[in-house]
Image 1: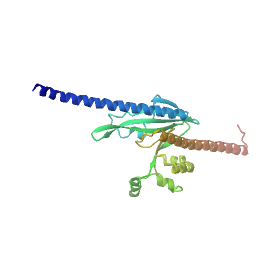
Image 2: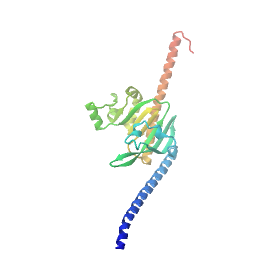
Image 3: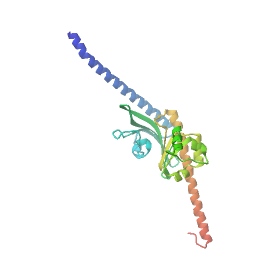
Image 4: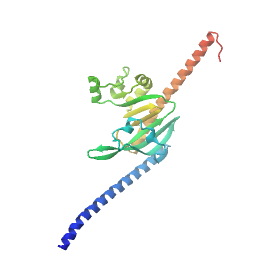
Amino acid sequence: MVFASIFQLLIPLVSISLGMGLAFGLLWHKRKEAAARTLALENLAQDLDLTFSAKDTFGLAQQLHGFDLFKRERSRWFNKGKVTNVMRGRVGETEVYLFDYSYSVQAGKSRKVVTQTVFFANDKQWFLPNFHLKPERWWHKLQAKLGIDKDINFEENPDFSEKFWLKSDFEGLVREQFTPALQGFLSERPPAQLEGSNYYLIGYKPRRKMEVMEARFFFQHCCEIVQLLQEKGKLELLDLAELKKETVVLENGDGLEQS
């Protein structure tokens, strides 16, 4: 009887010990996995000649809080995403970043953490209209046919319009920004999703944490998009210079002195 009583007392203690051991084991595994990823991405940053910081020393989470990606699928009690493994460099005058972004979402009765890779470009010379570009799915086409919702299409480029669902409240500005060269590039090499706002641009594949090789190609691909946006800016400056030159010539022709 004494042994039976002791055994009954030990059962819950053993269960608690096993539970704690399992919890610590999972925590150890996650930390080990996180450390391995940090090391792998740090090596990638060195290969790409980028700086690296395991923590968000640039305040990116706060900078980008206005984008859909950084405010979705979270309750008001769990609304602080975390940025880690930040790679930083430049494409010309444009600051470019690649980092991991983690946030919590409701999964049934519990919550789970989603981590995904994000590209970010910051250029004070840009004036991007707020827009969201993503692959066009069958439900988008159905919404358009039913008149529930519609996106921005380009009659001169049905291939691009067929592939992407492009939304913005500034349609005219978006049409100017999405040049034929940019449309062609995106059609051939879709970036998954892009969001733009003023001088910020982000790119990502929803809920996808990219492994090293995929992250490398994605970063390089997004940098090419940045270069196309830079080229558009240079052309606009050239057009402005030509306009000023023509204005001066006209003024001189009317007998006005050139300043």
